[in-house]
Length: 113
Length: 117
Figure 1 (spheres, rainbow over the protein chains, first blue to last red):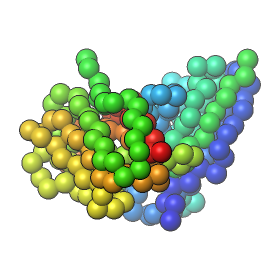
Figure 2 (cartoon, rainbow over the protein chains, first blue to last red):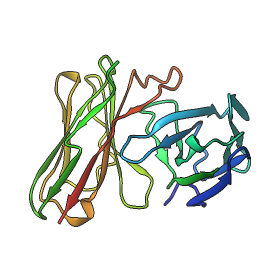
Figure 3 (cartoon, helix red, strand yellow):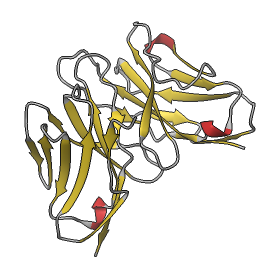
Figure 4 (cartoon, rainbow over the protein chains, first blue to last red):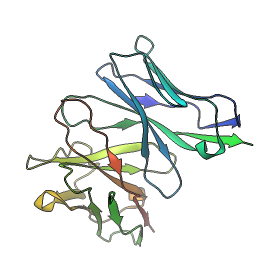
């Protein structure tokens, strides 16, 4: 039972354009959502997060949108840069308790010059 | 400062052998997590330690898997009688806490790639 899903295994975007990565979840108990970025042979690094009490959080070129009624979140990167090429994981958690992360399968983003 | 470190970075073992994977969390981090990433899959939670509390073992896939955390710092994940389906990247993460007073960022190590032949 996949509680967090990233339906696009890969995405290719031209440098300077907007990258949009999508994520869906099924468990309504999740109240905190995160995006991680992962380069080969490295662990995931935290990128941006959003609490369920918000619908948008922005940090520089990165913006995360949360649609609770649709159980959907998205990550927007604008403008996209070659260094953004990596695998992006969406994760969900519950603030109370262990704060275990439930991850999606990841989306490989490639930024083309 | 030093991040989360894991050793070995790569481990190849024969089916049926036992393996130990080590994690050194960030100093001062009381919460420690183990996750694994199988080929083409997202990371899945295995086990969680918080201070001196009993660990949350709810993600361990079988009783061949166990973990301990000595002195509230270093953790070892042990897989007994390894099987081919155990092949994966095993990732350790640590955070300052998980007290429910806000969300604490988890910092990940580089992982141990385990291959069972």
